[in-house]
Image (cartoon, rainbow, N blue to C red; front, side):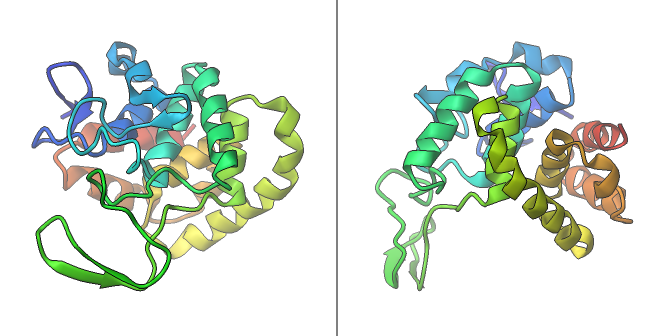
Length: 227
């Protein structure tokens, strides 16, 4: 199933929109017709600042949009030839030294810190962390944004981005982590053939989405990866 809320934004089977931007990006990247019905502009609440879901609390908090959300969403915007939001996003991240927006855990005011600190988590329980801060964007993530936004003036940076991307693919060979993002990244870099060297990628991908009763996403990504 591909679940959507009353306004057409993709959600999970419980109607939770915490990964709505993530799902919207995958649908657009894979060319699913539902993507044409999604108001992608609503995900950008201010210039270069995206949200996980335009309406749902806390997912409409622009300070909890993570790298995991960004990769498929940026890829989807690129397939739609919607380059301007990608460019705005790039320069916003540049001004933040290429750290992502998720400086808060989920809810407004739940600020992360890059030093030891204690806080009350979303379940009302005390928790202590030594380090907790926004996701960094590494050179291969930055290169993905540059390629997706057709930012030709920054293409020189791909000299650094491509080696990091190839290292990430090699490091991914024995991992089950972030396979959806890896497929989207490889699609943008034109390295899907290298990604398919991972012997169990089909099983990992389908297992992830079948366990969520959203097999269609797994099938779409499998078809994309086989191109």
